[in-house]
Length: 407
Image (tube, rainbow, N blue to C red):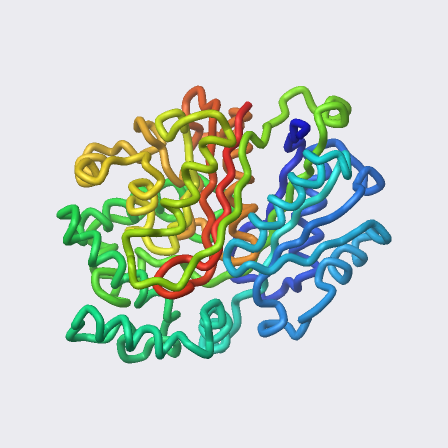
């Protein structure tokens, strides 16, 4: 397999953009990536475009890549439409990497986009709610609750209508980790404060305002222990990258970021909450990259809720279970800490336009490894990682993409 470099990245500001359509989101992010690489549209040999719910939100169910890219003059090349829930664009990245690594193409485009915001919040929640087994989700949860003698249902009143059903499931999962580790709601509030602090330094973030622990805890309960400021917002966005072979990359940049490992996995229907997709997939990613968890200098993880940040670090083998509270209390996850996590602000602050989320993570890691992340720059970052999950199958992620990058 050949070495694969990222030579250009670009993204929109994540947020509520009622004035922008899916063509606008793709045009802005791709144009920025091409400019960043110093490449032309004619250099692109193929395109891999990830999105999750434009059919529900905009009516554009099919040929999304062809529609959005032809609008900016990119036509005729092979285009692949990739849907894998919130892991859509990271899955597209895996396919783009594979095409270049295998020698099929020398220069490809990877894009993620989503138009998720709507004045009718129920429409957005319904779109998010399709990332489950629609036919069996209720039956499975009933069986799960019966098997473990749960007094209260996992899905609370208003789930799927006043909030995404995922928030109820994240809340339940979080409570199990609170029992294992002694983590408290205040610990999660500290993570949210850190995320918003980083987001305030990121011009692409949906939320760019620092908050206090007290504000996080008082922001309104979603599903205990989650409060509103611990949960990722609904919004729109686009993000893109240009991938090249080593030989082709030399034409565009002297500071490439290399994709050292790219792995994709799928979940399974199981009652065992200790056997997660993240745990199963992590060793494969580290083996591909030839490193271990302790070698990661900066990481972007899928924190659809603030507790997910520390839970993911534990499941990846980066943070020992018994050390979780101390890592948070001592600020190890800060930009200046020993294990900087979600320097972009993460999903909780940067935003979570689901199809664009994975490539938004990549955008951050590329700038961190280049040393161009500004006030949120991690000192001497050489190795970065992204963790991007999508959907729920049973009580675990349905899809997962892990990527490791080196400079």
